[in-house]
Image 1: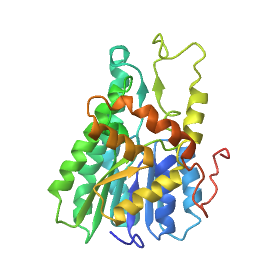
Image 2: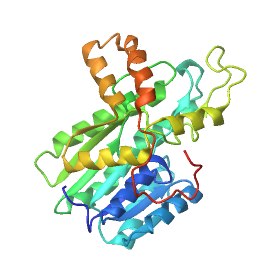
Image 3: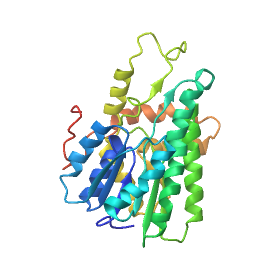
Image 4: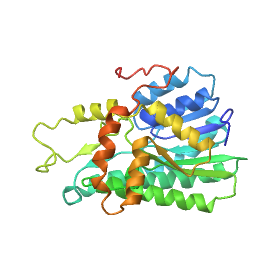
Length: 296
């Protein structure tokens, strides 16, 4: 798909981060957008940014871990826009905990949003996408869908799962009207840590002075600006790249696991330390101001 003008895009996790800027950049390119999130306030802020462009807009409060809510979403979008040309399954969460100490409730929370929600959303929107002359399905995995670290077992399980699911779909729909893409972001400055859960009872993993808010703010402000990440994703769609790596860190981590599949963790500090200083933390030019954000 080379041109987004006049198309209709559904974006989950659109209340902040990459989802927000996918909505903004698509609207700027002339696409109508149906933005979805569980948080009404942040979704309204994204809507305010999108309204600066003369496109169709609808907002949908959806818990991507609730299969019934996902089931109802296509009808709500079609009622507002009449068709769907692009679907971005972008919403995601995590839990900071070893598997041994993680509650089943927390495990299921991440699995339902990150994997089951992506599968369900893809399933319910596929009939509408297949009905269009050209269509796009974009599922967000992670660089953690290519490599693994300790303390993120559930996140890895979901992101490796999204990768396998999406790459299989890409093969199934090869040669049809439907492009299928899997996105692997590196460190992008999003609110995923702010919206996630941590097991602070684990000795040696989180100290007594652990402060989730401070950690989340550091993650948000020190990563690639999400507007740049969204631009990379959309350029990947235009170039019909099945795997879209976001950031030099993601590309180098993927290379590290290819070079030494069982010992790539030795190379990660060499990759991340210099890139920490080189990441472009500034937004793209001519972006609307975020109504609910602190300045970077």
